[in-house]
Amino acid sequence: MRVSNSKKSTYDEKTNAPGVVSLVDDLLKKAVKSCASDVHFEPTGSELVVKFRLDGVLGTAEKLPKSLSDNVIARLKVLGGLLTYRNDIPQEGRIEISKTQDDGVIDQRLAVFPTIHGQRAVVRLFYKNRELIELEQLGFSKDIYTALKKIAAKNQGVLLLTGPAGSGKSTTLAALLRHILKCFPGKSIVTLEDPVEIRIEGITQTQITPHGQMTFPTALRSLLRQDPQVLMIGEIRDAETAKIAIEAGLTGHLLMSTMHSGTPAGALLRLLEMGIEPYQVTSSVSAVLNQRLIRKLCRKCKRKIKSPKAGFAGFEAAGCDDCFNTGFKGRVLIAEMVQLDGRLRKAILAKSDLDQLEAILKSKGHTNMLQDGERLVSEGTTTQDELNKVCGIV
Ligand SMILES: [Zn+2]
Image (cartoon, rainbow, N blue to C red; front, side):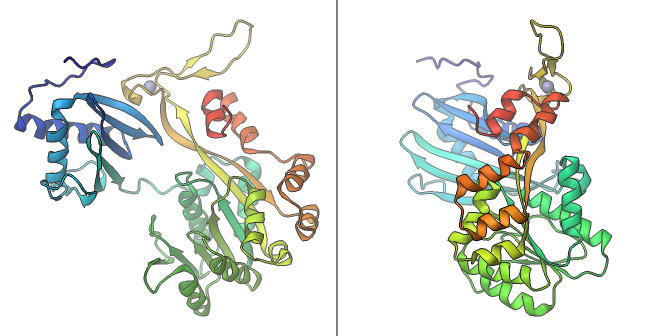
């Protein structure tokens, strides 16, 4: 039976074993060339679909005949040092970087998983930290950038970052720490991370072992005896960490961390749910920064939208070789920031709910993430559709 592909496969169905070796090599090289973060090999009833995650979005890169599926996965398993004869269990491994490889990849992790259509495999690609990004280069609006600099200059308080995984929070925290290091030399800066994602010269970074002795609360408690001035905790996940972190922020430490929450107001309420007293939240938290990464239009192929009316209607994605036909290349931040003022403090002390806090923000003229993103749409950096998608507006 002929596989009906919308995108015709360039690979011969009769490819023999040596062919599979170069096929897998070519696919991985292509993924690295396009800066993909993950490569998925997904078997379906009729084919093996290869997908690349580019700028956070998964898209089909290739469809291979079903007959190649087992050989391709077997080849990956050989590369990853996995048991090729076990097809019924999940396995994880590492694909070694060859000595001659000079493409910026520092780690390639492989995970295979059995499905009803055969095994699926995912290769995660880790690249060398490209140039470390300075705070002013992250793309924050002028207001947020100025506010962040003010908070970074403080000697106490808590700055919380929110946003889902992959929204650039680690990059922002690293930029903030480097900013403090540069502007306030001599300040003692320490971090607790799981894992350490970005190494920064000049500060003390410690990796947490969540299932070992060095958990966030244990490490944080001892660390406070090391006389730090600035503390960065990878994530506040539990009530115990939250409690120590808030106390640290109240007692002469500048503390920065991340939390899982969709909105800044939600993060403040989450602290209360974790058992932090309202007065502790209002007296320690300086601000909550909520951020997302949004794809930038490819400069080579973006085109002006033809508007029936005269005037500027924005740009749209097209697609070219340079952007792997996605129309987008690279990402930039959109953000919203809530700083605690008298009204918000009063509302938190009065145990207001989410709707009440959101109403206060609205009446204060708070710029939300969608509004922040509008500046990128109007300057032609991204599209309205992309902004809506990132902000969860269908
Ligand atoms: Zn392009």
